[in-house]
Length: 206
Image (cartoon, rainbow, N blue to C red; front, side):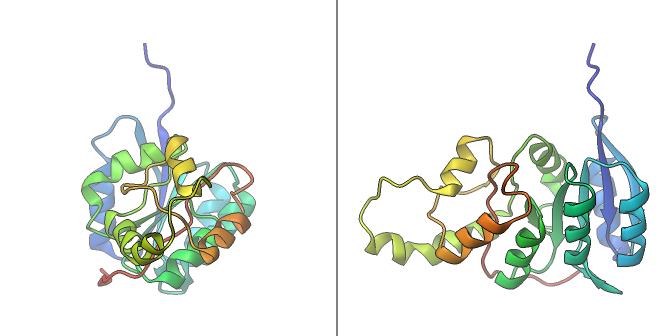
């Protein structure tokens, strides 16, 4: 008999339609349990303080502040809770700041809704789910650099993550100096190797 406890999930999302998509993606799965929902940064802080959770799914654009502040609080107050960003913002500053704050995965809204249940499982198991469009932007941006630099024997942090069960949905690439710095200073870097990187992509907020 399977005695594994369900993965406890809390959501901080202010858009009702996006929230509905997330809830419907989680509801059918017996191994996923929704334990709380908040629509503002203030309510998210209270939810984080009062509720036991394994995964925090957070939007960045909240009506009373940035979800990045909530990610920082989670990294400090609940270091065992994995944070998964679900946002329409795919620009470099948003993604890098999210990983610096302590996020372990980054998904674009709507585009990844169908895979959300599997992404949560992968995150909880030690992976780092990242939207294919963001991974594609990274790969395209690094192609000139990779083409100009002959093969190297140095292992890539991204390759390390994939070998350790990471969930990046693209081929292994070499991280830039900025991305390596972001990874090295992430609050969760000392606990396990993650890929804290992304690049600009087009997205429209829900």
